[in-house]
Length: 151
Image 1 (spheres, rainbow, N blue to C red):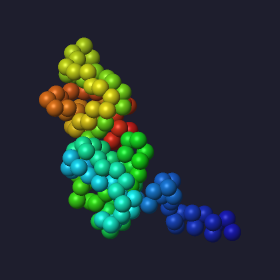
Image 2 (cartoon, rainbow, N blue to C red):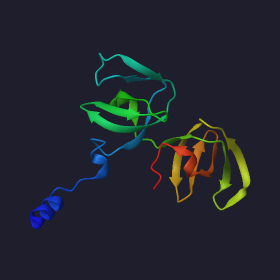
Image 3 (cartoon, rainbow, N blue to C red):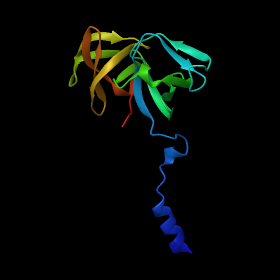
């Protein structure tokens, strides 16, 4: 009986998040300045919310045909047509922080990034990410960014 149980466990690998999410959650961003978040995966479904910020990061948690179920930074969930979603890596700053010119020198601050600012992710390392917030490029602390995996 133990052998059968072990065989069964190894035969059907289960990821822990597969119970919660039907697909691997992945971050993306909005393509347009006006994007409708709908209650269901249909153009006939009522509009739940209208996003009015291009490049706003979202977390895709499910899909159905040409629709993606997403979650935003506030935890709101709904459906967006795939034509409104971009693979560009963006972020929302969760806490006011300094934008440093160099990753290994925190003495040169080129801007102060306010909470809620949206920007593009260029690259990330362990603690810091290089970002672009028009017209600035620099390094910020990764732990205060929403829109990317933390590992």
